[in-house]
Image 1 (spheres, rainbow, N blue to C red):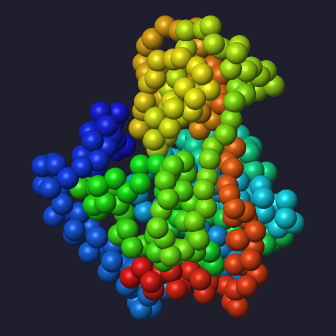
Image 2 (cartoon, rainbow, N blue to C red; image 1 turned 45 degrees about the horizontal axis):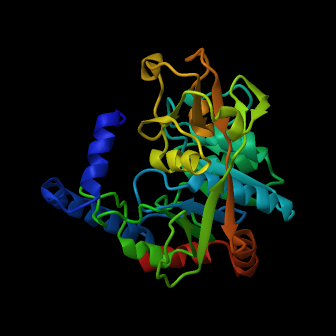
Length: 349
């Protein structure tokens, strides 16, 4: 069962501090960390098999529950690597889909069959995208159908240790690590020290420095032109929306980031935050307005739900310095596939 809107907000409040609710949940969190540590140890010691693919693997992930900007970063990497002459494929779990089987994200697929983020990646990247809870099997299926693919990008696979990786990239957004405690007392899937073992750390709109022994990159999401949901060729500028009664909806990892983006553009609107990957129904839109504003990810779920004008804001990542160049150097410098990922697992265990 997915978290409700109220339960998601309640967890976020708990994770922001070390209050009574977090303290009561901390013993469960410590058990969670113990199990996670034993699992990493099993892969480090070879008790659990790590599988290597015939092409380099770049994993994009985070150590927090929920979204931090992994999908925009994966999309940016796919586009830049293609421009550099590589032929990347993308694998993802496909959170929220109806089952966990291996599936190609092809024409005619829906959020229910492949998940929202893989569907967005397939539409925007022009790369082959496969989904499956078993990322190794998904990658092998992708390579079997696309033998010209020379690199795999794994969207949200940092903890999928069975998949050997050449480059690990962790994303942290402006929320930081919040209270720094393990699930469910805090948001952490793994200890904060795990960030010291990745190859690169990307700060998504973090707005502050982050002491780190690994290279740090700054990411910013940019976008100011809206597309009409039922007619993407129709676009509008901020000035075209300024006089309207606007409502904005967001079911992403941190909805407030989208609302702050709209405010920075100079728009005034009524915000409606929903849990990440929220499945919208008509009842979620029981308010009157001239137009709705939303993210590309949310727009994938709005067909037929609303008769009001819906304007979608596509965003592009800007990353400094050049992370794609860094990735290519890491891949080209690897003596054999998987060395970097193995050392990352060893360092985090």
